[in-house]
Length: 323
Image (cartoon, rainbow, N blue to C red; front, side, top):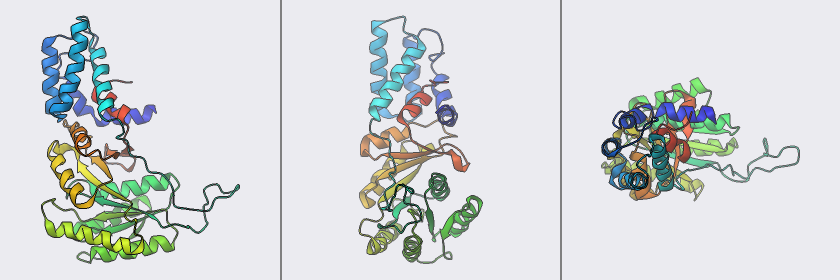
């Protein structure tokens, strides 16, 4: 747990410093005052926590300050973290392993037995530059490390470098991948990948789709086509439809999420690039508006830097709490 929290805290270093730098030692051992509360408000807006969340945090801290003029910075930080945890209650997405393998007393996971159900399909969606392709590879590696079998589908055939990028990650992390050439029909690649994953008894199929602007109707239609093709194999597929969002975009990512959700019915979020941004609050706005669970955060460049989203760790890291 310590290592996981440290990853969160390090990943949010800029968000933490952006808040702390404007609060005159708010998180230190000194008392707070009215000026430091004003500075905290500015810092929360700068970090893209939004009007509603910022107002709730400040209201709780000011209420405590009115009751106790000796209120210490750490106490204020704990109040702020508690408000964030309340706002994000239910936001943690969790993958459950359920692909219908046949267990036995000697083989409780049913490893090596034919699956009685289809592979679970995770479609990764997002605009170019969001980190979608690298996140697809990191997710596959993470699932593999947890003992699951995974196939990657390189369906971002629209962008010349995307297929090679995913192949490079697959080679580096020893992952199974189904790919074709640049310009190939992405739905056909998804079709072939599902057949391969099913035939080989894989637990998960992760589909890396073409990066698209949420305003580009032709690319949104391509996404819908992939879904239709997958549903010819399995009416439930893709069981997961995750939007990969660049956390450094701040509140601009909320509009993206709305459009993709309307078009594709998102079931989850992955927020990336939080290791180098002072705008780590945007995910709160997305969750408040859409109530889509957040599965993972990208907190660095390495495969292990894709971390499961933890409301508690996020709130503590934002306010500089913990060891």
